[in-house]
Length: 324
Image 1 (cartoon, rainbow, N blue to C red):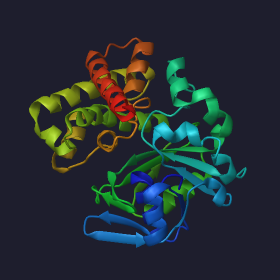
Image 2 (image 1 turned 180 degrees about the vertical axis):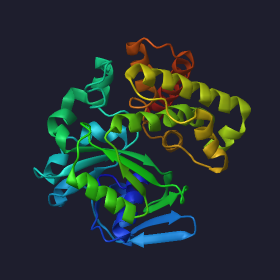
Image 3 (image 1 turned 60 degrees about the vertical axis):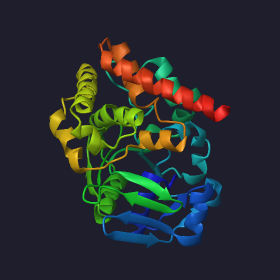
Image 4 (image 1 turned 45 degrees about the horizontal axis):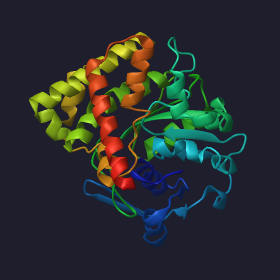
C-alpha cells in the first residue's frame, strides 16, 4: 500500500484483517505511530488494530505482487521514479485515488488539453514508468479521515464500495483476484470493462460536492440540507454531466438521488480536509480538470468556472500564507 492515509490506511487495515499480508509505505508521525502501535481503523462500533510492515521508502520492501497507490494526486508524479523497485514484470498497480488520471484521455473522442495532461503527469514520468497494461483503475466509495497518527476513521461503515477495471477494458486474473479479496475484506467490490465511465460517474459527485464543502467548511449532510447549497451542487453536477455526454459517457443515476444519500452522512470530503490541514489541495485532477475538459469540448459551464476560480484562489491564498 503506497500511502496509508485515509483511503490507503482503511484499505490496508481491512485487507490485513483477512490475512492478505499487507506492507505499507507511510512517513512522518503517521508512519511512526503505525510502526509503534499498529494501524487502527474505527468504523461504527468496530475498532480494528492490525500490525503491518511499515516503511518510509519503497526501497525497504521487496518487489510486490500488487501495489495499491493511495497517495494524494498532488504527490503522484513525485513517486513515479520510486515505484520501480516494487515492480516485477507481473506486478499490477492499482490506483485507488480520486481524480482524473493521466491515461484517462487515451482513446476518447475529445483529447484532454495538453496543459491538463502536463499537470497530471509532468514530463510524462508516470507514462514512462508504468506500462498501461499493468494498471488497474479503481473507484472508491468510502469516506475516511486520519483523525490521529496511526488512526483512521471510516464514517461510512455500511457503505464501502470499490469498482476496478483495466484502462483497455480487458480481463485480468489479478483484477479478478483483487475483487475477490476486497469482497472478503468487507467491500462491495466489482469489476467493470468501462473504468473511465465509472471514474467519471464518481468524479461528478466529487466535483459537485467537494469544492462547495471546501469553500464553506461544511460537511455534506449540512450542504444537502440547505436549499441554496444543494442547488449549487446540483448545478455543478449537471454541468459535469453535460461534459460527460460530450465525451460519450452515459448519464449517471439521478443527481438528486445521489446527493440525497448524504442527508444523514456527515462526510467531510478530502478537499475540505486538505484545506483545513494546510495541505496542497487536489485540484488539477478534480474541478480544474473538469473545467479544462469542458473548454476543450466546447461545453459551457459557467457555474463550474466560477466555483473553480474561487477554489483555485483559495488555494493560492493558502499557499501565500504558508510561505509568509
